[in-house]
Length: 594
Image (tube, rainbow, N blue to C red; front, side, top):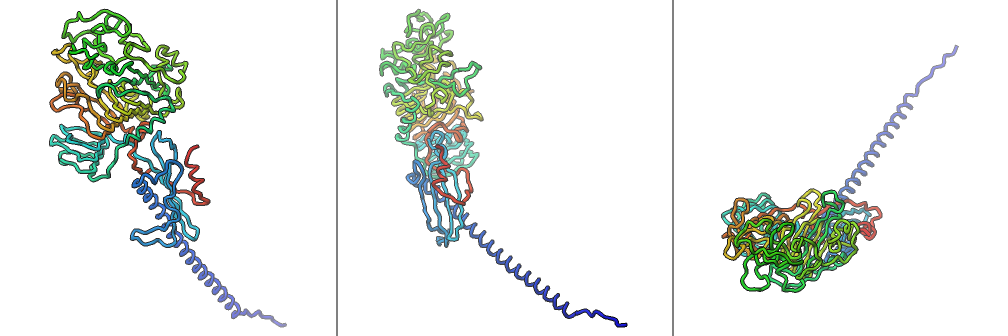
């Protein structure tokens, strides 16, 4: 019997195993080599991408610096190429190889200027290999309403007596602080230096030698006329009268249209416009007794047709100078008697000055101007007498209203504001009585906002409402208004000064500001004061007002419509843009509403 034996070919198997191992090792080596090559490529790609990103980001800041340095580089519409495929330099001045950059700038978003000046800078960095990075930075111009206090010229006026200043402060001049100290709760900057810096407490620090910030110009003011004209809000006045007088006055009015016991709704803000028939009646419009009719020596309020008292159901002027009719003379009241029930003074044209407290479209010294637009039936139903003379300062009843009222000449202002308005006048703006908001200044919704833009001065009038006046000459001065203080809600910007008329004259102790004796009490201003040269509202010996100024934070985020800007662009939001198929013209078209 044959026995077959299978003999293993051990040498062949070993060869096969060796070959497999060699192949595996070769694959590993090849894979490692490929992985190493890919890692190198990835590293180079990321390094290149990092360079492009840095070049693009740097371009945003370089472009912002350029448009801040030269206003002409920023277009009014569309976009402008500040660079187009330009060579880029490193910090040491050397050329970054194989990198080109394009920079574009222009207005975007709401470009009317009503809510501020907004724009974008777009930077495109690319290389010959087709790598590309696109970045966009939003920019906006700071509004002057960001400041609680701003001057170009400080003069010799100093911060003193433990002044309390809230909000940002800037001056292009030397800021002086007396040894009696002052506390600044917001950031402080000056183009010059701070004299007496040790006398100040700076809660948010200070900066000397800051960039110069130019005041707006008359041209900036005149540019607002076209915005006002669209909404039927251009008014022609005169320059007659002394600095605290005007032949035109605007009264802000809030009307509860829907009878919900408030006037906070969007469509409930109006103005009324009163004008004197003759330039010589400017005294009457602002209730100024000092030049009343030019009839020689005055007997204080008793000879003024703006003043009187309640007599039963009617209001009687002391000298029986009734505008709307005739009435009993009240001269029988004892001279010097300051306790006359219901005694008060009123601005020219006020209803209460008419016999029986009734509205008259015209009186012997002036008239109310009718609204040139269509009167809404709801207004007529609510107040039929005044309806034709109520000018809507909202887009519900005045769709073309852009938030601007423009007066050619001087204008006196007062009243209760509901809405967002910039009132511009080519001459003085006279604060004839309190100007307050329907909603509290600084409320979360910033519902009400006022900007006063005066081509000359903004003056708190020395009139029968603001200044305590004797009943007769030689008698004790007493108040003839409902309050002994004055209230201004808003941002005042004067191309000359903000001041109180005759701030260094009159009583030194007729009224009080808290526990402090003063001539005219407190001047409460909530908003900001921007002026070319610092003006005075009181005197060290007690005449005039004691300042009580507060900052309205809404001015920083929600400036009054078309309120002037500093021209300085600051950073806004930052965006990474998909570079695939990027086209600047198409992209810019998307950024601008149509």
